[in-house]
Length: 428
Image (cartoon, rainbow, N blue to C red; front, side, top):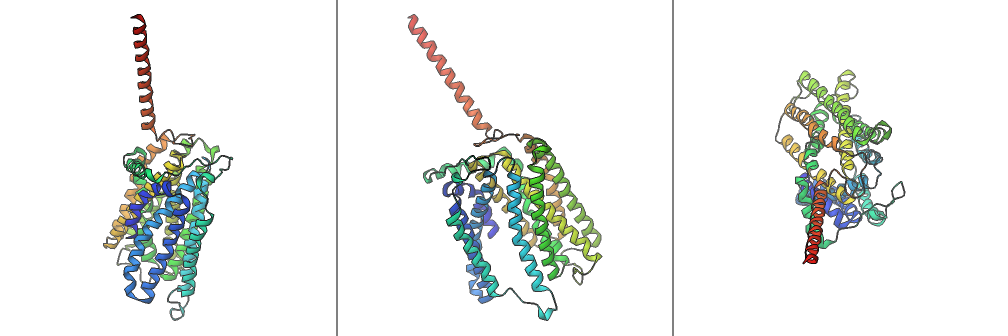
């Protein structure tokens, strides 16, 4: 339910951003996380009669997540200078993943020690403290997040953004519809789908299948830590590094390097999966523990490698979208398309997992998607301009420029005809 609603409203989140602005989207989005967490707690810990409430909350969270992630992506890419987009996303990903690191270590702590001494769950006090932080985040966003037009970039220029009037809502929907015929969005679709598809396999077929409970928590913490740090390093010290070449060069070379690392992860996974024979319903007995030495090292490094590859793909995807345009309105729609299609892919992946598909089959599907996205993404990378502008990047508004040229030619022809008519009238 969550991913299904996320995929629908994710596509629309760009228009919501343009109509409502950052403050409402971020405040509402954060609030839905708190409502979902409380609903799930009531369902799981109090009474099964809250099941309907939890399902409704998951649907509402899909809308809220679309609002929050749409606003986050737009702010990250449009507030940055052209040589800061990797830095801004890397900083966001690093901070964002600290939540995953904290959650992993909490799980590790709860499940460590003798079985009879382990906590069966997070205490209500701890749980509702996190819920309170979610609500506090919503309040903070409402009162302290400023309008995009009030933001000043590092070079002293203001972000150029004007909210779309609500009367123009139909026009926004038409702009969203155009995304599905936008050449560059269509070419990036395989990359977008792949960018969240692999989580079902990685957290189910590797971390979930192979390890015991405390080790799964420890692995999750390490996974998100590596993901956050590597995103920051990739975005800041390569994709934004002007001394390493023009932006088009960095787009092409970055794709080559990131694709090689990403494919290496799947080669590693295929070798391990097929050499050990592990698959759904056939995991190691007993599950691997972090104290098991060599038996732990190989799958642990595989899972850490997955965290590295995940961050590089995510960072590159956001960075190249930011290289297509600098316009907040345009970027909001691109980010919305990205989050909607990404969630649609994740939804399909989790459905495949829930249907009992073997992990070997899921692994081969992940590897196939990792190959498929390279050629169309390369096409986009070759079209990246070394310098963009603050409205729409040259590469993405070919149709608009064509229309302007047509109108210009029509005006010239009209003027020429008027001159001819005036001359003929003078002769007469």
